[in-house]
Image (cartoon, rainbow, N blue to C red; front, side, top):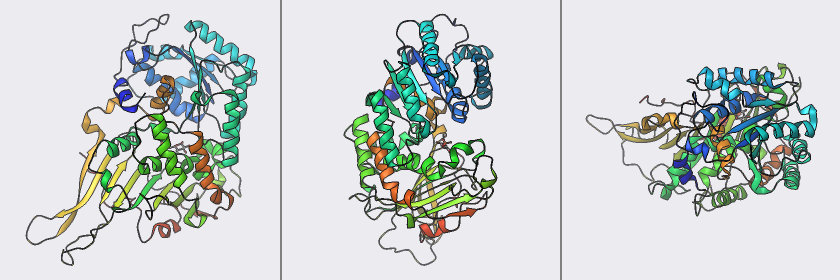
Length: 506
Ligand code: BG6
């Protein structure tokens, strides 16, 4: 199913579910009703991701009429029962779900949730799924969501095999997929012992962001930009995702992962591929994956000398963190893509926790004109090159900056910009949060926005020099932009953030 046809199929409008009785398939919207009923088995159901995104996301998908009749079996290492899990889900949805859901809707959503502790093993899991399937009737589909660290993935897949939950099933696997090339290859092999490739959905939620998909629309639906999308016109690209939040309750996961594995080898590389890929022959899973994988194949192995690792002050004092920890909470690096389109165009990537600001931007700096006829002091070039900037926030924005004449006598130049914000379309309410979009795609069986075994293994392969010989971690103050050497990394260029001029409020 291609991306564009799917776009029209998934138009979202909230539907009222208040009056529909529980006993029948009470999801009136056609988009969800066209799907077979589903039992969703959620591993890591009491974890941070489930609370912040997955449970509130399911609630929204259901409320928007995009889910078929469904049940959720939550499971984790915690010894909860159905009631305890429903309470956890209620609290999570109170805190993180979109407003506008009635108590009745909430209660009817919760009725569909059940829980089985992981300590019960495959037999208990199988029984819990059978109970849900009997309630749904017929032969519902199964969707297993593994919201668990990479080290636990293999044993959970085996539990699913022993529990007999492979038929009619799809499996969503969270990133990072493995921790290096050897573990990714091994994990792919062990998952393939149980599930076939078409059942596997390796999720990278950045690809589910509306703004990330808009990169494809922007590049390939317009004749204007593609001719300049190459080394002749582009000086460099920045993919910059600073975060203000710290590691907090996720220290246990983060300490063994770090910023590079958590964000770069996953989200930032996937975005880089969307930016750098050749036009696919069709907007379908295989051609898109082929072009992305070619970018990964062309990526030069990461040069550790072109990487700055940092750790924020106070990180080592967090519970669950080694007092001598060398885990990086910040990373900035230069990547090079060895192909005709991008030869000589550096891609600078940066991300970190506890930084000065939270943002997700992609910034393309264009080359300056070969010759300037403007008088000295006119202002041309004084505010950097022309930029095209994508803001990947949920409420996404786009800006094209350029020099234009300042009104009045003489020829002075100012930096001006054309800007677009998603809310101007009047369709902001239709935006699906990234996890919502991808859970729905997995239910539909659409792999377009998921990553492939080949792509993942290659991104680990290019990461090997860095993972084997990482440069030292350098401390940085919380609320800063990272350790100072990140400036030398990009010099003589400069990081776009913090922006010299803010987004225009439109
Ligand atoms: C997750 C990382 O995958 O992405 C987190 O594990 C990070 O560390 C998060 O904070 C960022 O996602 P978003 O959608 O909030 O930008």
